[in-house]
Amino acid sequence: ETPPLGNHPHSSVSIDPDRGTMFIGANNGHFVAFDFVNREMVWEAWMDEKPDGTGLGDIKTTAAVDGDTVYVSSWDQKVHAFDIDTGERLWSYETLQRVMSSPSVYEDTLFMGSHDGYLYALDIDPSLSDDDRLRWRTSLGATSTSSPTVVPEDGLVFIGDHNGDTNAVDMATGEIVWSARMAGRVSGVPTLTGNSLFAFDSTGVTWRFDAE
Image (cartoon, rainbow, N blue to C red; front, side):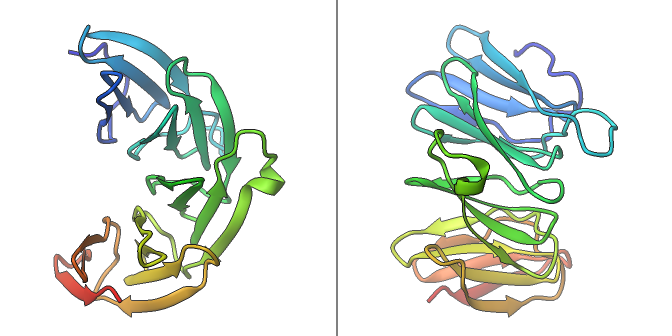
């Protein structure tokens, strides 16, 4: 078993099988890299203070593992990039509100939603400033706690929002290509199989769309 994380681990575990490391966060802002082979902590990190001063940012998202970096977002309104071996914080980017959308990384771009209603596309180059990191952000018109599904062969990112929309967004430009209204909030992760995109809403209904 892992050492206690402190407060209600809400996020799912992310795994780096080559390193034998798993990553998980908790509601007290504690983020841990744990060696699941030798059963020992590799490193730990903490989120920043929430803007309302009520403590460190809750981690309710699932970390994205990509090469030598792991990314996690939290209620401190930011997404953070950490060196996967040492836990050194490489960069952070702040949105306008808290983040419950898990990051998705494809090549050199990170995608995520936010309570501020935007879908963000960020350049993951650690040498960039915050001003240069933002590639685009697109208003979805409502809070997004959904996590993005990236489909590079179609050049699209799929994400839901609290208006009840499932949105198909152009990866390169941020333009909303199409949007479909459902019966309730969409907070889950859209799932693609073949040409079919599946999403479920807060009324308990699962919807199927033609992804193209």
